[in-house]
Image (cartoon, rainbow over all chains, first blue to last red; front, side, top):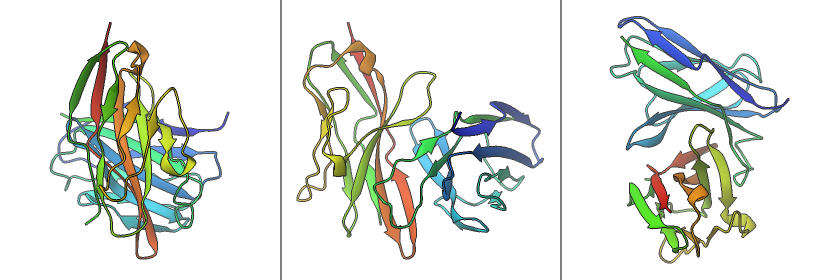
Length: 116
Length: 111
């Protein structure tokens, strides 16, 4: 069953701790993205990766880090430096970022992170 | 700067009424625009893309470069259309390509 999977669905973190959100896809997509979704803010791009071992900052990268060691995986770490980490996080993938601008992005179910 | 603006946070209509969700963009290049929809408890998914010039679930959207708009329209709204709608823009930032979203419009179709 092809798709994009995020885990866990719900995550609780103590203030001051780092936490890593998982995103895996078996669609053979080159490009992967992380967005943050807040009420009234829409989706804001955190990081994106167009190819393995390469990634770029999005619009709100501060306090976050990513890695792209494998094509199918793009984990997001929310560090203690992120001042307001409580949010809903969405991962997405698409066939290829460059040269395929009319391509569809496929989204995961999301991870709701709560800092307690 | 590249931007997608959806001026209405909330839109409420009655079943059978026409609906128009507004989307304006700012981009100096040739835009690639999309509408995504998120139904309750479902993942965000593509509704339609301007390049296809298609009608999906009765919705259409026309790119107006003069007005830099990509409004989503449906002549007769149905209750199952109630959802969060996002307008999105693909754009090139040098050698990188990004997909940026508006803040979304929550559509409620009342019986």
